[in-house]
Each structure stands twice: as structure tokens, then as C-alpha cells.
Image (cartoon, rainbow, N blue to C red; front, side, top):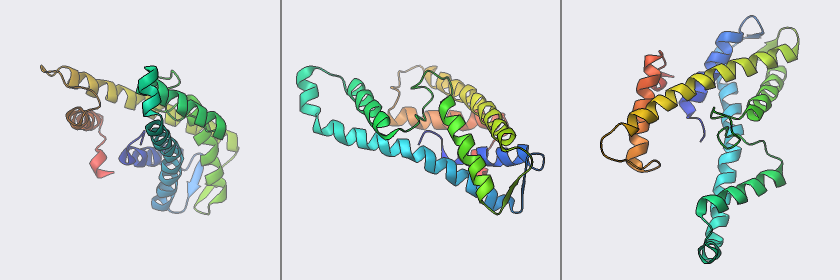
Amino acid sequence: MLLAPEFIDYIAAQLLKRMTPRIIETSDLGRAAESIATLIEDDLAIEDKLNDEARDLLEQYSEVMRKEGISYQDMFRKIKNQLIQQRKIIRASGRDTGDKMKLSRDKINDLSHKLVQLFKSRREFRVKGDANTARLEIVKILTEILQMEDKVDHAARLKVKTIKREITEGGEEWDVLHRRYYAEEMKKLGIDLAKI
């Protein structure tokens, strides 16, 4: 998944903390945070499923790719783009669209609309005032959190790169080191993902 479930829980908690009671009210903070996290996870899972489907399709065309000299990455990107257009899915990955953050600006806006709908439709929420004001606040909060996360991710990547021997990105060792350094950088900001 593009964002770790623990980080999504952190986002949900921050949205509630920064918006309550000024913009929204909630009768049950625990259920409210769970509802927000579930909505975000389910929405991001759509692109994960699409990636899996693109990989399955690639297996069918591996012989053609080999004969034509087309790289796996190029073909994967092409198939994924076709699936996104056919299904009218908003691309979640910001880095695929040129945004520096993990989530694209379009996905942040899309999530803000869906979260406001969630706030309007569930008993545990009450939107105070204008729904668009709530939506804009969600965009602002998500953007701030994701910019902070981008700095943490960048710092963790630099730590992995500074190791004297070369470690290939995407490999198991690289993933383990990145997760460890990422958690360390988050703790420096007072965010213990293990406790969320």
C-alpha cells in the first residue's frame, strides 16, 4: 500500500485532532478515527488492486516484451495508465504524476470530498458550518502531513544510501533498512508508528 496502515491511523487521528471541535464534532473519537482510516485505506487499496491486475497482465505478455525489447517498467506503466483511463480512477501515487508527496494532489482533493461525505452520512460526525470549509481544511491538513512524511522518507532513503556497500532499492535488505530508518525519523518528530 502507498501509505502504511499505521501512518493512515496517524492521519486519521491528526484530522480529528485539528478539526475537532472547530470544524467537526464527533460523539465517539475512536469510531470516528476508525471510520476515517478505513475510508482512506479502502480508497488507496483500489490502486493496489489495479497494480496487481497490471502485473497479472504483464505475465501474459512476457514473451512479447522479450521479443520486442520492451522493459517491464515501461510496459507496466503503459498497462496501468490504460486501466486508470478505462476505469476513471484518480491516480493515488503523487510521484507518478510529478508531485513530490506520496499522494497526488488530485487524490488529496478526491479524499477530501469523500471524507466530507463520510462526515455528513455518519451519526458519529457533525459538520459545523460550510462543508467546503471542512473540505479545504482536510486538504490543508493532508498536504501538511504528507509534506512532513516526504521529508522523513527522504531522510530515511539518504541513510540507506550512506551505507558503505551498495544496497539495491526494492530489495529485501533495502526495505528492512528503509523501514527502520523511517521509523527512527518519525520518532524524532514525536510520532511512534508502533503505538498508533
